[in-house]
Picture 1: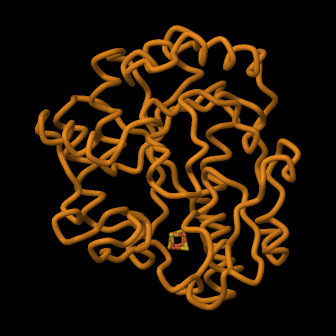
Picture 2: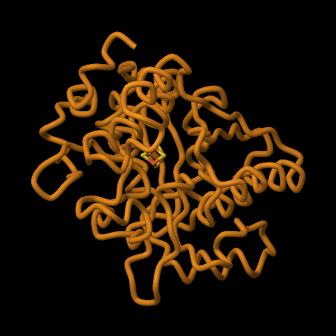
Length: 277
Ligand code: SF4
């Protein structure tokens, strides 16, 4: 698995200062800090084109028209998400860098376990997420000092520790910037409506969190917003992009950062058959 490079600056001190300066600041101020603190080729906005991602793109292009944006196409995305990539590109006149998994790794995984391996076991589900999402992200983050995400604290109980600026211990200690950390779902929806932002068509079909097509379903009223992700599993509704995961008796489980030791450790061990892929 690719490893993020060591940070090129004192991430911890930078984050501490930013948190003091940005306490209670709006997302645009957090973005402004990010674009001041890092060279434009060393910070990028990562989006999966969900509501939060489009809100951030809308804010970021106003703050910094040269903002660099990337998304990860796992190869299993819904058509509606791909359509939205085009819509966002056209609306803002921007490019969106699209990251793909390594073809040889996907081929080895699918040839060994079949195209729908994620239903066979939590280990294979994480292996699929690892090859199709986590590794492409790791390769990108190894070239950056900071990345910007749409994480919010109230998306899921597993995310209640999200801060607006943090050291990303999972990716080599670079800086992770989450301008919407304190925003509620209602604030996001209000921004989308007030600014007439493009939306993924799947939201109108009852989806409340949108990932890969075979691993996402609509949710029922009152369900956790991420309950439609890997709904057949009991464990964490995470793919490993933001947290180190392991498998225990409940399924995928988040590993506390201190157990990670500042680098990714778990998913590779889950799929030893891929080490040579
Ligand atoms: S969400 Fe599903 S299809 Fe997408 S990478 Fe993860 S397991 Fe594979």
